[in-house]
Length: 254
Image 1 (cartoon, rainbow, N blue to C red):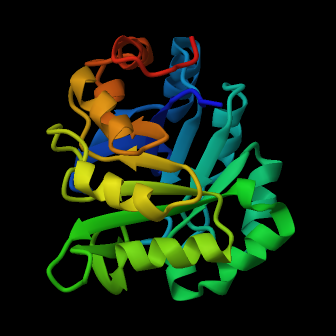
Image 2: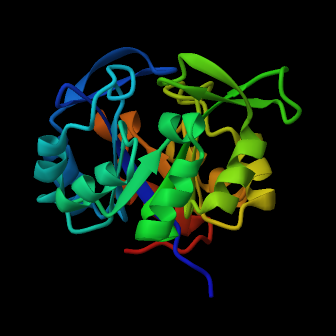
Image 3: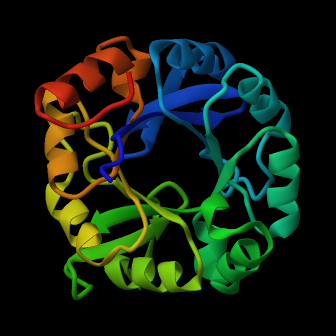
């Protein structure tokens, strides 16, 4: 059975506002998360991802009030990431409307966190958020970063993704820091390498600029495509992307 391609808008949130930059730098205001969430839901988004991009940097929890207000506006799966450090955070996020949670820095620091969350809530709740850069220091040529791409780890991105799947993550959100905000297309090599071994869905993120950028990401092996600024600034709508995917013979929900 062929599953429909998911189109997922991403709300990168800081201090209660949606922000966007280039390569996660020079963040600028892009609007109110609640208003944008409602708009994307009405446009036909399949899911919505909410990332508190400064929670880890500021060493605090996700802004639950904004998550709750956002969840009240959409009736599609909502993934929330940023500041998740333990099973209690997952419980609280679910209580405030999250369907899935994303983990990144805390899981890198303590991989057992993945198994703890998966064992208690199920793998379907858990998304591994991978902020990846190209690097000659790793065998695959890709390294995992934290803190919004500011800090490089010693982890090979492919090795870390494999281990996370073994520990229980149910989905990989693969974001190219190099492509983020550049609007030159997704990193197709990175997507293809992840797809080769992944036994869970792969979400492609980072680099979308035109409707023509989305079908190649699916062809490379992504199960879903995620974008932010092209939706926030009105350059593209969810419908634009779905029509292009359908035109290329890919199944979408209408």
